[in-house]
Length: 238
Image (cartoon, rainbow, N blue to C red; front, side, top):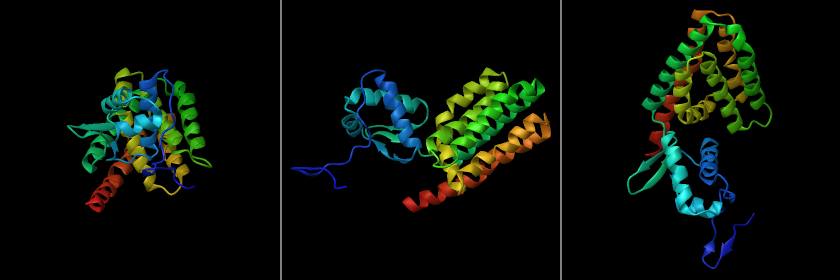
């Protein structure tokens, strides 16, 4: 396909389709988030308010508000006099994020099995089944990442501790970026889904030691293997 042109030369292909006015700011934020998670906007890229507004057929004001929402969720960063940029997870920041996830999700799972684990199993099993389905065939990366997060959030929710859920939701978007990075560890998306099975099996068995080991292995593998990849990527860009 030839690029569109005008009297000034080639016109850059729009990344976004025009939006209508209903729930505009939230819809812009959702559209930008999906583009970031899918990798169409890379970590470190600047969010050009004028370009995004032009592509979506809106003014710059709602784009700026949407960027602020994404900043509050940790997905983008504001740099004074330069604008908004997609958050880049540094190696140490990734380790810290996954140490926090290990602490929260281990505590949630242990609290879960101390109560009525059997009652939580249908919801957890259904969440894992949705993750496996999302990883099959023509894998939709965004859908798979959402299903991955849903499984882990289900553990926090089933624990009955609202604070676990609150913290998980606060780090959800950074976690989305983390899961996207983890995808680089696997040639087969289905393997990501299967890596959750030992966690569910340990909860089903109400085995405290197995729960601790399964979550530490599942999240700890990413904590240990992804940071060297981030360091290598940083060195390549220099």
